[in-house]
Length: 396
Image 1 (cartoon, rainbow, N blue to C red):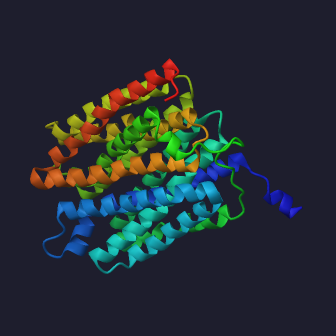
Image 2 (cartoon, helix red, strand yellow; image 1 turned 60 degrees about the horizontal axis):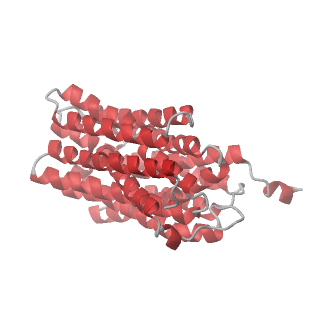
């Protein structure tokens, strides 16, 4: 009897657990921005770390994320998603512990990479699992899944900010967040996961890479990742150093940005298939360009900060909706296809935070953040072309 129960897949429960795992993933990518100023003092000595060194920490985490995604995709197609869902949470838990006791900048960077690696393993398996569990409503389910990344970001930022105010600092904040990945590691052990493709078999990546539509989708999700993460990684430092707000207000700005992203994705999840997904992405790109420029150059610090936070809402749909429309286009792409998409999206997350820091060192953070507007500006005509291709009914 127990073996029979073990073999049953519980779609709703497993979907909810994947939402929780997306929150666990968010820990690794959202704790750092709250503590950029603190880490500069803690690991940089009297002179502090340069803005490029701070940007490098975020880039290291996202490099680990991309490596985890690329390595996990083909293996998940072969061995299934379950062992990787557990491994990802185990690595996040171990890395948080290591970061709490890191003695040097180099050691911290190593643990940041490992944390990103665990997050990348999770990022790889969660989207295809949720897509397989919800085949009739992929765009809705994907936006809900990724809204919980934002919920996790809010929890992480709030926990980090409260720990900062309570005097626990960077090291205490890392330990406060341990229970979530540890708990998920235990609960996932009792679940059975679905197959990543239908009985017809997986469409090979070599075949997908020959299709112009898929290659364009990879470029689009790279730009979507750059749009989202350039602002997310630098917003607290920008609010504190360039707009003149306190560290607490700067942390709360990132929390508000994450809330705006969660609300945006929940709105898309709520409206379901009533609106055209490509038109939603195109509008999101255009509005985000306007808000990025406003946030970078408005003379009023308050309104500049409001524009930066609002960009979280307008840019929120780009990543998950791009995943969903590609899964609808190629339903048998398997975990490897999701891995390629996630790797390119997170490559945008590696590139843009570094580029913002690079530009800021040579000018200032106003121009650093302004460069982020290039990503949604280029993405807008691309998603419009993808939508026209779908309506035309081509196979590419």
